[in-house]
Every structure is written in structure tokens, then in C-alpha cells.
Image 1 (cartoon, rainbow, N blue to C red):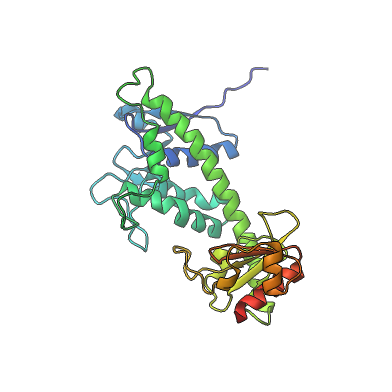
Image 2: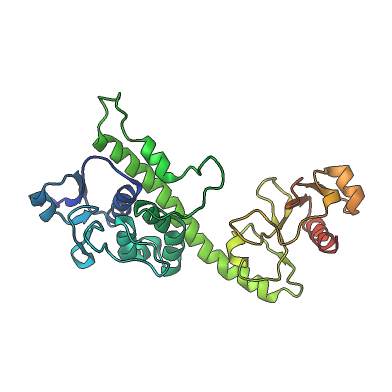
Length: 303
């Protein structure tokens, strides 16, 4: 019996230099096709005939038509923008079509768009997301991918070679962000239910170390969260919630007199017999037991 060869789908983007948007666009399509066990090949070119015969075209070609799997944004007028006015790049256009399918839900897709996709799109389209108030800038994923470009001395290294290396790394990053987003969606149900069922909403007690920060940000009452510690095995932590996730300012600090204290010193000043330590920056305290952690949280509210 003669086995019929499966056609390899052609993923086409531009050759030459590469950026985070075409790298992540390629990574997204790669993960999508790998999930469905569909073979594909990645081609970097500006040859119009090759582009015309491709199954997926991104960041090149001058056309945006998601029905035809054409995802360029360089044409006059661009390819649209989000409600927050951040324009789409090739990554965003592909994520808009396939993000929900790849991440498993609309909510997970939105989380990843806000955290990863939109910032990449913003940078590629010349949008500044932060104000530089110091003489140094933040180091972003875009900077890392810039570092992967061959330098003038690396004559034996090609852009195509480095692009494919970047795509593999982008696949790993995106895969982890999908896992994080999926689990955040699941955690949200538990955290919100716990919040609603808690009488004194200033202290929220969780039975696992759920990613609660962004979930509880929408509720004004919580000041501290008690949960099993991820830092120290078999311990319980109390963490102060921040006023805003973008800044390091707590809704309420632990008492200044606790800052930097450990074991006996902290136990003496708090009266909590199994207190372990309080961070010098007053955002975290740890106890050996759940009960001890709850006591520290309640004392911190009064302090």
C-alpha cells in the first residue's frame, strides 16, 4: 500500500532582520499547527510568488485578511487597533484569530493579550507604554530578541538561523504564559468565592497559593492574604496587597517595628509563638502555622 504524503503547510514571513512581533507570530502558528499534528515549514522571503502560494503569511505581503490567513499590518492604514488604541502587529492579528483556540478560553486569551501580545504590538508600532524617569530603561523581551541578531562580526551566523532559535524560545515563553493564564482563570473562581464567603474581608484566607494579586485588585476591602508559603516549605505566609500592581505601595504595611525581625524577636513583639520573620520592606510575614499567620494578619490590621 502506498502511503500518501501529507502536504506541509507554508508559513511565510519576511527575510532580513526580525523583531518580537514576527517571532511570536510564528511561534503562535507553530504551536497551533503542532497541536493539530499538522506538518509545516517556515519560509522567510519577500518573493511575491512564494508569498502568494503560502498557507499563512504574516508581517509581510501588505494584506490583512484573517479569512485568507494574511496577517500584515504595514499597509496604509494599518490593520486596526484595540479599544485602548494599541494598534495590531502581526502577533496581535494572529492572536486575535487563534488565541482563544490555542489558550483554551476567551478569558485566558484576553489575559495573554494584555500581558504579552499587546505590549509586543505596542513596541512594534512605536507606542511607549512606560515613561523613562531614570537614565536607564527597562529590559524587555524585545531587547532580548535584538541581542539574538547577528552582529557585524558574526559572518558565519545567519538571520534565518537566529530567527528559528528565537521562535523556539518564543514557543516556550508562550506555552508557559498559556499554562499561567489557564490556571489563573481556574484560580479566579476559587478566590472570588472565598472573598464572597469571608466575613472580615480585610483578611482573605486561601488553602493554596493561588495567583490572587490581580484577582483581588478589583476589590477594595482586602488588605492581607494568608496562604501556604511558596518560599518556605510547610510554612504559611501573610502578604500585603498592593494599591496598584504597577507600583510597590501596599494598601497597608506591616507595623514598622516588625520590619526585618526573625523568630524570637518577632515572636516577642507580636506574641505569635510560631512567627518566623517579617520582611524589612513590610509587605510579607511568615509563620509556621495557618493559625499563626492569621494572628499576624489581624495584628497587622490593628498596628
